[in-house]
Length: 545
Image (tube, rainbow, N blue to C red; front, side, top):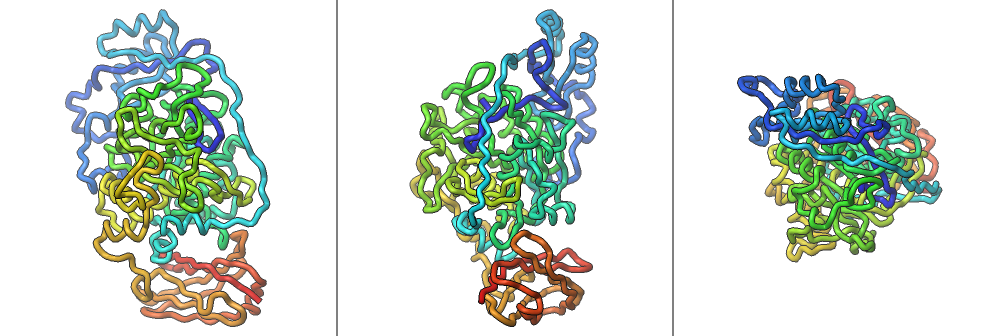
């Protein structure tokens, strides 16, 4: 059922730790109400950032924002039934129970219905991990979307919180490419819904998929690799258990989405899908791909209703008997991402539409064939899958949203679609096509994307570039005079030089010698950071003989 959309097939369990080790099956118990009464006037368990997101988008608090009734939970526990998880959106709990215990539940007046989450048998998932020492670059996948223009103008996802759901994020906490995230405290939260005893970074080979997906959003390994929204903040959730597949994984996705909502996430990036090949239980049918039947599609719709932009991979079944998109990509408020190759041509493995109710899906597409990723071992290597197209679009959305914080999630959803190169005649293969950052920016802000100095205060220019001997770094600063630091990094993202500089209002020029810096032939990254204020901008330097 749950399939990680890269040709790595995976699965999972549920919240606190819903594993399948117990002797009894799992059930989803829906309640008739929340017994809120006057408590609706109290504040739900949401962070200030989550509440602010609702205010910005004019979304009122509703009953779905409040937890399930503690009184009802207590009565179930009194029946000696273990509650494994609670969902405020579905107003339901997941339990592990016997048939006798179920009969006791059915007579309780507050129980609406009970849905079985069939649990039997499991198998190991297939994991393909082949180290690749080739020389690769993220340039093509970034340029295809026009993100290099966004980055050059200082729009790098800063201030946006992206929640990523996957099967683990091995070594993300160790690789140099991510250290700036931890240093700047932009790793807001992590949670392992499958095995709470393990860090999301310690899932071994199981976490390769998630690590590679995350790299497309966040890795910074100049000059060869730059994530689509490398300055954003992140929340990482493990919702996939690679040992089995079943409906419990959809419950995990739901719980992760509720968690992301409570944190105040702006965007959910999920490279997971639910359709066929369940280890246990019945596969979904095409008739269920209507955007409102599966648990996970309902969860995606709930998330969107709370102001979150939900971005999900379409699936990798384009050349399989099941060729259609999988849930939750079928949800009408979920931005479903298909895959194209480096030439912008539809990739044959990418799942197609329409949905069962004949809506066009996927919505848009990005590079998912030959996409360059960073592996947990620290190597750049290409891979295929809508799994990789999805985070590129999530990063695209974060950069675009940064340019205009007043826009609502579904307004942004439509602006992204309408910027696609197939927007006039959307089809069932790539939907509205490959979005354009330049077009989307103009449609959103009613003006052209700024490209020239000194329009913004966050552009570094290297003169000349490529560099052979001496060179200048030019920076236009719009703030009050302050101190800064210019830091040089090599291709492994290792710091090699740091210089303290004084910044004044207007153009600043700093002179350097390639030989004094001991820069051998190759690509480097230069970063200017503020000492006493939040300033961080970067650019590449090519050194040649």
